[in-house]
Amino acid sequence: MKKKLRIKKILWATDFSRESLSALDYALFFKKNFDAKLYAIHVIPNLPPLIYDDAFVDSKEMELNFMRINKAAVRKIRAIEKRKKISFDDIIISDGAAYEKIIESAEKNKIDMIFIGKKSHPLWERLLLGSTTNRLIHHCKKPIFLSSKKKRTMEFSDMLVPVDLEPIMETELAWAEVLARKFDSMIDVLHVMELYEYEFPFETLEKLVQKISKKLDNSLKDVKAKARYNIVKAIDAADAIVDYAKKKKSDLIITATHSRSGLSKFFMGSVAEKIVSRSQIPILLLPNKED
Image (cartoon, rainbow, N blue to C red):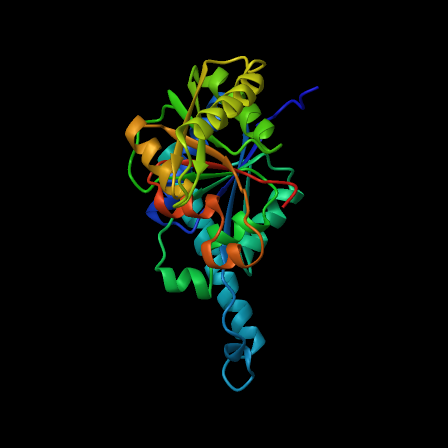
């Protein structure tokens, strides 16, 4: 029996950037369509440990600084409320590592979806430090909606769901079904045969496609929404997914945080991370409980 999916509480994470304001538009769209509560969170970063040394700054001065920044953040969020003619159910101001505080607040408030603006970071920075988004991908157990930087219309007529035939596919299709029924969308299921540089006889590929088709037919038979699937072969799955989404003009990519293991994960990253870094289309990331 399928577990009923709920979208009753939404958390919008903001650093007041243009990207986070774009994420708010999507959060408000989901709030309206699912009659959900909306929470806002802003995390004030911690300063380097050296700054806390008594030789530089005393604790009272730091406390005054935090109070000033805290009040300024609340004023900014209140101004957004006034401009958007909305009211947040709660405003959370915290300090520390952004991804940790977002996860902590999401768990404490039993949030169903987190909305965050996607930013681009240079490769060296992602490798050495990691972005808030990348850390959320690895540690968060809640669905994360990543808005695109580019301004888009608020519609989801075609949703792309890349699948790899693993058990997590059921969760991906369940979420796609809920959204498709709400927004009257087409679910576009894509399986990429990641063959790298290997070459196979035509007959072998045909048999493989037939086997995959049978599995997809079986998985889609219980989906109560418009759905279709396609199978493609490619050297790199993430590139194929991003290119397919662009070609089909998909409105949303729904994917789980499929992970590679060991050294391959360190050097190549997960497929989800690659999609996030390369796609200009909004993405709904679903946590893989088995990771």
